[in-house]
Image (tube, rainbow, N blue to C red; front, side, top):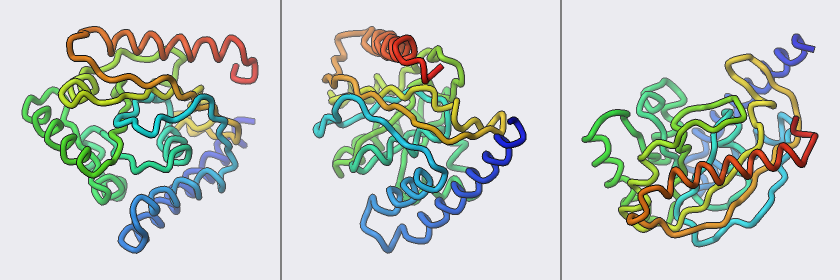
Length: 232
């Protein structure tokens, strides 16, 4: 079974690379955000995974916050919304050959950790993005966690949301690392669940809203695992 999973991972990874190449080739041909959506849908269809959506997207949402387990998370989010997403990612990813181009072309936002000047740039970039009606999309954990417990949320999401009084919508993705795990060279087709939680307007007077949000998202995640044996 492990050998089959490794072969499936290689197939899925090749599909992802080809689809991202198509995005690059069509970026200046198709109206945005269709090149990125096309790429995401090609990946989703070609590697045979489906997405079940629970809850409703808020059409007025200005920021999506997602838990992060797998590279498939981006594909899932790009295919369950028609909105033009601006992904916030660490600067090292922008500097990578090929993949960095995928982030630079749509003018996504780069963040340099532990840098005060980067925080200023993040706020400026966020204002630029909001003027174009794109949705700022972040993984507040800051990195992947393949376990069922979410990592502590970093403060960047709160700083941006508070500064602009953004309408924030959390999205909980259920066990995406169970299907695609780049560290273990593992992939299997399956049905991924995405849960839209209720949106809210960020209140800078509430110092704990991001910490409280993590707890709420974790509770949604835990309840889904407890009530749906197929995720175990």
